[in-house]
Amino acid sequence: MPRINLLPWRAQQRAQRQKEFGLAALGALLAAGAVTLFTSWAISGAIDRQHDRNEVLKKEIAELDKQITEILGLEAQKQRLVARMDIITRLQRSRPEVVHVIDQLARTLPDGVYLTSVKQTDKKLELHGVAQSSTRVSTFMRNIEASPWLTNPDLQVVETLKSGGIGSEFTLFATQKSAEPVEEERKPRRPRPPGAPGT
Image 1 (tube, one colour):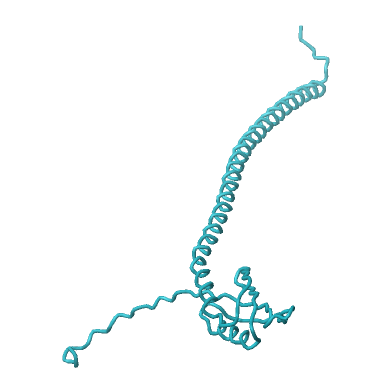
Image 2 (image 1 turned 30 degrees about the vertical axis):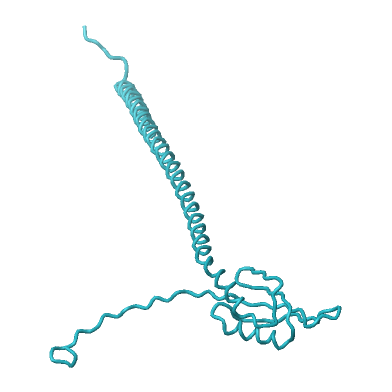
């Protein structure tokens, strides 16, 4: 007996298409999920690697900051040491100058002039004394001007001695010179040509 298919062929075809479409959609969803999972894993790995690099960079930066701080501390210490060395050098250089200044004060004092006090602030000298006359004070100032270690005499105060004293008190300012030794460079003599006089 022949078999009769009661379903129309279009309904079977539609059902087949729906089945294929469902399988295709399921495959697409699975593929999209796999791509998403792989992409998420790759991005997460890249982020982790970048975090590791950032941590390494932070450690290196911290080490460099520490080294920079140490270098700055050494630079400051070096500047302090250089400043101390400069002060010591100036003090050593000024030691003989004080002796010369005292010697020059003794040499420039004319007869009839006596110093009662000498005060020095840096290069400035403040001299207090007694003179028998203003002429002797002027002579003292000329001697200071001619001195190789003293200069710029400036008379500030002249007061006549009280209680019948002879002469007057004076206050005089002067400036100390810094005599720097000048080294003369010896120039080499040119060789005389043969046959020149004196050869």
